[in-house]
Length: 171
Image 1 (cartoon, rainbow, N blue to C red):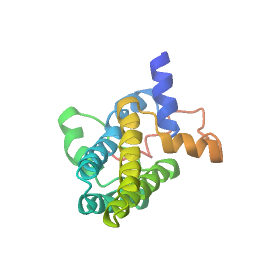
Image 2: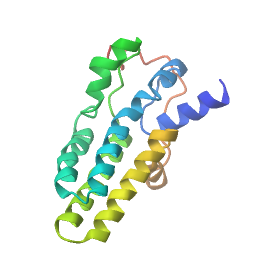
Image 3: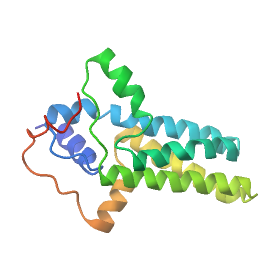
Image 4: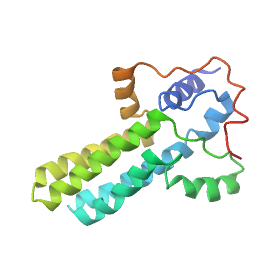
């Protein structure tokens, strides 16, 4: 396994996606960044305009990412883009990825609430902090909430076997 493949595997496993083979980790590396990228852009627009309406309209999507087996924005990839490029579907979200969505929901809602109640500095800090954290994930694959979860709860436990993924990945 190359150094790059090892880094990709570690970063994706830190988000709770385990027991996939190296090819699968490589194939889902960038598609896993689509939902954070769309949220980041939406939040950047809402924060730059200091718009609670725009931010409140994003908050349910982030919350659904924590509740559902995948993020609502993953639909663009799973039912569209992946077929164009012959790629596999994204795996179901585990606890760590859901934790990231909960964190996003809190930051987005805090920003929206700050702007709505005239606490502009709070709105700016929470909004831009979310945009910055999402940018780190989108540009590098490193998930800050995943890192925080590791610090609080320990490293993600993935088995050494990477070929047991056939039944876990929707096609």
